[in-house]
Image (cartoon, rainbow, N blue to C red; front, side, top):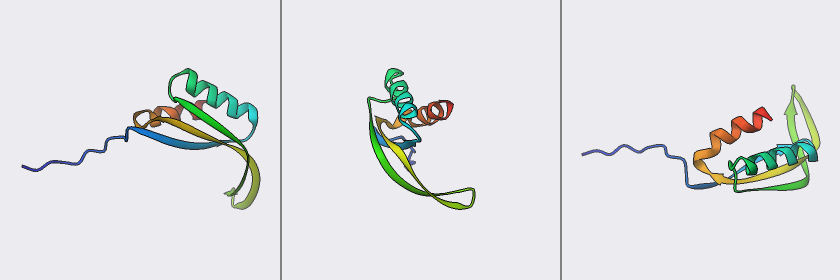
Length: 84
């Protein structure tokens, strides 16, 4: 008998995203915790980022959000952050 590997989300995970300012970071963190999509969200200020935007190299300051959650909630978290 053969068994198939199933793509199950991992139990507990840490997800990362960034926010442009303190207000947005607070909104995202508060919403995810209040709606029980995350157990905890750490907001780390003053992250220096280098990225490509519209074909140009950009440097900027952002806030890093460290989201502690269950793997089964990742898709819902992505959708929720996009909606905010």
